[in-house]
Amino acid sequence: MTTTSAQASTTGKTAATPAVRFDQVSKAYGEVRAVDGLTLALHPGETVALLGPNGAGKSTTLDLLLGLKQADSGTVSVFGTSPREAIVAGRVGAMLQSGGLMDEVTVAELVRLACALHPRPYRAADVLARAGLAQIADRKVNKLSGGQVQRVRFALATAGDSDLIVLDEPTTGMDVSARQSFWATMREQADAGRTVLFATHYLEEADAVADRVLVLHRGRLLADGTAAEIKAKAGARRISFDLADEIAGTDEAALRDLPFLTSLDVSGHTVRIQSSDADATVHALYGLGLYPRNLEVAGLGLEQAFVAITAAEEAKQK
Image (cartoon, rainbow, N blue to C red; front, side, top):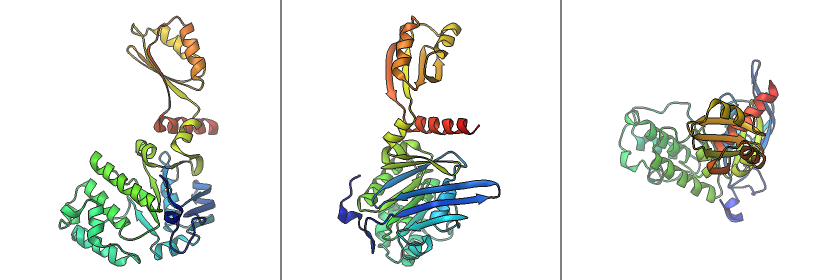
């Protein structure tokens, strides 16, 4: 996404001020370090995906950012102030999985309340339309589907002119068309100079939407870059091909001995390999006397790169 200097400016701050800064932040629960010396900065207009396996520290990081928890050490700032000050000023909108919604009210009533409480509110009708809720505005919240509840949470997060939007698993329960509409709206938010930070398990969304990807592992920042840079960091490529005959045990054993092999999957006639040096692996493959058909060599997808990076880190710590 491209952002002009005018778009990147935020109320009372310049684009030089990070939207979010973590400086050597740590948070522990007993013996478990949920966040461990985390240092990072997010900037106006960025769309940032926060990835990590369960227990990586994503939820604690978001809680610290939103002032819901206090760091044991280090500092967290939002637009140069404390998280609480930024939230009171209406500069932060959040869509969290935790926390319930009022049941015995309509969608419109809940959205109007959120707009009334925001220091820089939008019109409730505009918020309902943007979240795709206009057709169910008169429905009570406890009568909504899971995907509709997510859209209500999104409406509450964007009830006013916030400069930072924080989203925790935002599209859980949404169908494909609702997801596409949701991310189109988020692109508009980022193009207007707002910072969008989202945690997700849908790595294809991170690949398609995020300008920047952060990978957390055991509370530490393991990787930080564009999706393409994260894929390159994994240092592996995918090789797939078919063989004319079913793969016998001796052939599979020979495949497992290929140089630079990091993983092997054999299914009938089809072989899928990950290699840290695809050229050398393919050269050795032909040396086995096998004749690969439909040979394809490609970079890892973000999901495969994520798995490779976190698995490599786990192996280091054993």
